[in-house]
Length: 316
Image (cartoon, rainbow, N blue to C red; front, top):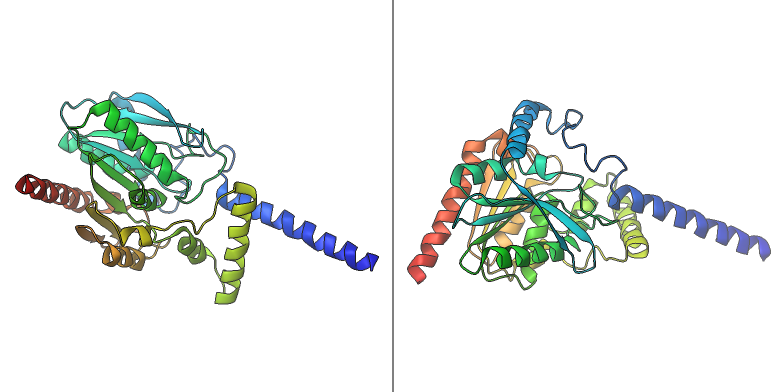
């Protein structure tokens, strides 16, 4: 009897240790990775674009900006860079991806805003950059941060300034999921570049192995999030939110995305109840559509924003 209890206790201890290791690996930012945004040469996705990315990073630092900060609904301190040099112009709120940086993922958004004289907020997503927060929650908590940033920008720029939510990868899923929350009425459009349908689905996608093993490892991962991070990966999803969406959305995805399947983009586009457009960038891998073909990226975003603005003007 005692041996059985000891064995059970040992197994539970090992399970707890394994769950904690999974939590640290999946939901926490590795030490030293928060601020070294210029070190991109080791990322296989960016290798073809290192030179142009460094050039744009230099421009991001050269153009005047101010550091802004807010307190999230759970008390987490969040930081961002605000480029606000254009008067009476729309404001784009940009959110980067998992283990990413606005200096990388914001490449296309920054260039677009400079070209068309839009103001821009580059947010450091919680647990990234200067922002605080212990856990990366795949959009579960980040969607509330998106809402808080939108409220802050609406208050700062006023009721006559149009806000546009934009994101890449996890940031795209975040801005899509944020639509289920009460956003300022000045939020007029969403641009979602290579987002995923749900936290559950992207985690299961990156787990390799047979179906039963993927499900087992996912459930263990979900449990680790719940126990150590106090959040549920299935609390919400972009796909379900889009079925009731009212904000026009532009979906962008690379045809050769090796991280988030392009089919997820098509699935979300089909589910979206609001006005929508979809652009597939041929040959682009994950999160590099704007780098692969900036001309197509820029023209697609510009045409979409003009289209919905003209419709609003006609509607009075």
